[in-house]
Length: 519
Image 1 (spheres, rainbow, N blue to C red):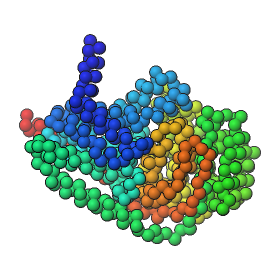
Image 2: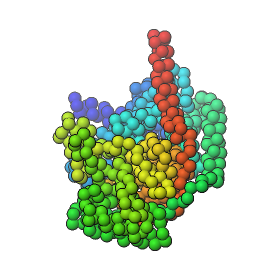
Image 3: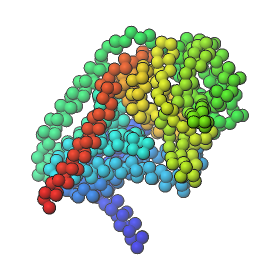
Image 4: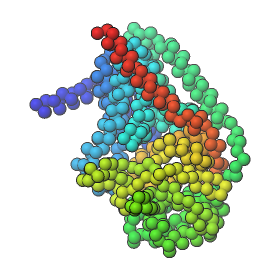
């Protein structure tokens, strides 16, 4: 019996509709780095929309789920590198955990297509229901159960600068909505041309063209707008130590690690710099507890006559208990500690175990000091001329955190990360693509120092002016003009996305009301 049920499910998965959904999933995955064929996102949903024609909402959910499973299975393949190589999980455990996350994310695709189809049956056009529902569920997954705001359709366009400038109005969700609407209009046009007996989507096409024209007009204006900011530029040096994760925490390699950062720092600072940035956990010991090693870094700051910002684990007492933190310390040019910023959004199973008191059988995937605790507030660090907002690794994917730092006074965002966990995969490039949106949303330049890459400088328009390769010792220098700290997104936040959530609820309510009246 179980075999027959499994066979039936497999048959459904590989029927015509299932194959169309799989095709869409593949096209979506290919639009993200790497390979990053971003133009595919504008046609990727057409096979999915063909599969959704004239079917029940329950079937539409299954079709959307199939598309999502395919897309995220390809996009997130690198999770198995993290789980197996660094988390030391056997493949028999890694694959199910990976598939569970893929299934969780794919469920939001299914909900989007299911509700869109539900709305169509109630007489609401897909050109409205699908873009709205897609954005609503993208937004919900960005915060539900800690959230995972990774690989949204809009992120695939990170290099198309004129298009993505509207992120300072509606975040990445505005670009996602345009992409979904374009796919719906194209699908309807293809149906009309094919002789399916449906009218051309004239109204939808006009709306789409107006939106695209307005988006590009706004984007080119923003890109050509002269930057009016009297703040003094900051000369920065970003150091990529390329320390292997296998030896990063080994006491035997501590000396060589510090020597590497000292050498690269001296090379990068020859022309004179104001700020030197080392990656997340660049200092492989408790900076607070190692006075001799700490003095070595303080002396380097004095020698370079520059601020040094570096990642290091930290600890403090909270309610009488010792608490571990993933932190960034900053030293002034005279070697004094001028501040510490703590990571606020931790990685589930990486830096802490959710429901750890209950799920005592689960160990963290990342071998480290112990469970970390989140920082309690957004702390901006002052270089003397400019304030910095520090985002550690994973938390740069959450726009609300960058917004919080800029609203607190930061005029340069600093992302420090250790992407060595990802190996030579697409993940570091996906991570970088997402981080560029933080700069546009807040109109604040972002500098990124990564242990093994990608280290990069991103201006307030999201343009990546320089970047390193993966797994090489490197540094990047540049002169950064602090941002204005002014954008509509900073004021309204994710209000447009919340509106989509309300509209999606309205679609469901309207459909339910109509069905009740009919029955």
